[in-house]
Length: 143
Ligand SMILES: [Zn+2]
Image (cartoon, rainbow, N blue to C red; front, top):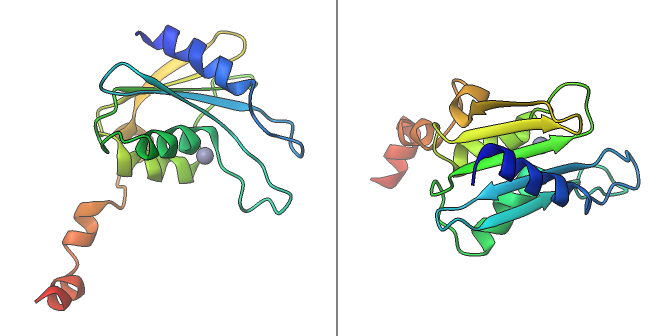
């Protein structure tokens, strides 16, 4: 499955978005190691804070379905934006946690524009597992 095909899946997922407040629908499609696509959409909440983005919905859904972290092959994200949509900061942090830094990220819009980047390029200098491992206070607690 190429980036364009994954983007089509993200577009379908976008139609399921629950957005009674912003009406800003976003879709995501996450390709796993077996070739299966996990769909995600944004799900809003009247309290705003509990709202979940399309990218995280797809990632959390895949993990819940039994996929291993960092086994994913690509993700596509689409929204109704003038230029290709980009993941928010929270989603970038989750992508760093669950995906390989070299994993392709396809970002698109409804006009058919799309660009490709990688998880690592989206969040340089990310706080990750190695940051925790290098903590001296954590190492002292584990002794
Ligand atoms: Zn997000």
